[in-house]
Amino acid sequence: MSATDFDHVDDVSPSVRLRAHEAVSVVVSDDHNYERGVDAARAVAHGVHAEYGAEGLTEMAVALSLKLAEAIERIAVDQGLTATDLTDVWFAA
Image (cartoon, rainbow, N blue to C red; front, side):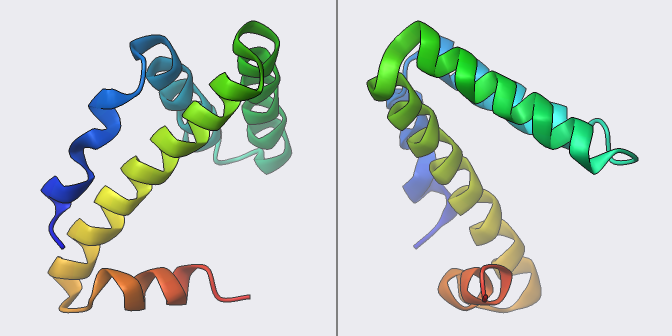
């Protein structure tokens, strides 16, 4: 698989894609206060649910998954790993 295999995020509605971006941005923009970033991301998710319902929340989860898969693929290539192996490392419990 290559990073271009995950370009289907364009199939997600622009408004939900914008909210997915917002959810990630609030977490990475406040790296000195983890709790505040998590609370802000939850607020974005609650807002998507309130505005678009479960379908919108599902769409946002898919958009986030596609973008994360794209990023993992790129990082894996740089590190000489498979995306599957890197995913297993990142999400190992």
